[in-house]
Length: 340
Image 1 (cartoon, rainbow, N blue to C red):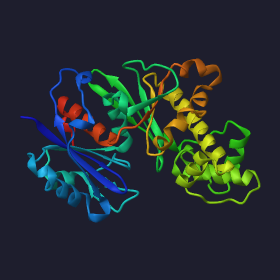
Image 2: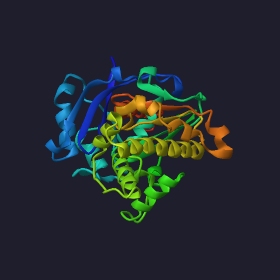
Image 3: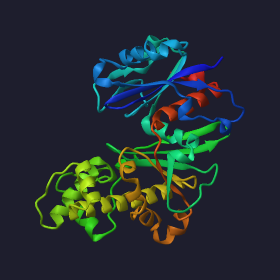
Image 4: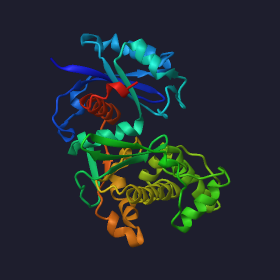
C-alpha cells in the first residue's frame, strides 16, 4: 500500500497542498517523481484562513480525507525558514513550526524556502517542462542553479552527494546590480534617486521591468510614466511603444548578464534554470532576445559559461514537486531524529 506525505507550496496569495507518494529507492539518484504522481492537489486562498494550521486542516479534511492522514510533511514557503518561528513577509501568517507539527499530529515537519523547492524539482522535470535557450550541455552530477524573475528574484543551488541533493539557499537576488552598457548606467543613475541601494531584484522582477521602463523614460527626457509590468510587456510585444520595446529587450539582456554571473559564482555546470512567472509569458521573445548572448559574454571567462546550458522552467507546480523530492530524500536518509 502506498504511503503519502503532506507537501505544500505557500505564497503570499495561494497555499497549495498535495499528497506525495513515499517511494522506495536504492540510491539518491534513483528517485523518480513527476507532477502527475502528486495526489489531490488543491490551491487555497490564504486570505480565507486565519492561520496556516486552519488552512492545512481544511485541506486534510477535504479531498485529502480519502487517504490516510500523513505522518510526515515538507512545506515550501516564500520567506526565511531557519528559525522555529516563521513570519511571512507578504502574508499575515506567523507561526511556530514545532507547534504546528504537534497540532497536525505529524512525526516530522520541515519548512524549506520556495527556491529550495524549485531547485529540488529540477532533476524530476521532463523535456516538456523545460525550454532550452541557446547551446551547452548539462554535466551530470555537477551543481545546478535556479533563479528567475517573479514578484522578486530568488536564487538557489543544488549540488549532489552520495546522500542525495544538497541545497544551498541564498539571497543572491539582492546582490548589487552591475550595469554593462551606457543605457544600463543611465537606468542605475535613475534608480539611485529612488533607492539608497540598487540590487539585481530592482531590475530583474515584475517591479524591475517597471523600473527599467521608468529609467529609460528619464534618460530620454520623457515624462516618467508608471506602467505596470504586464502593460509594458504587452506594449513591447505589440510594438505600440518604442520605450516598452527597449525596456523588455533590456530586461532580457540584464537577466542574461546576471544569470551568467550566477553560473560563474556557483560553477553551475549542471545548468542554469530560469523560473518564476514572468519569462514563460513571452517565451518565444525571450528565446530570440539577447539573454543567451549576454549570458555568454564574460570576456576571459566566456569559455567557461558557453558550455553551460540555460533553460526556462515551464512546469505548473514546481514548488510542490520539489517539496515532494525533499520529503522522499529525508525519509530515505532516516533523519527523523534531527527533524522538527
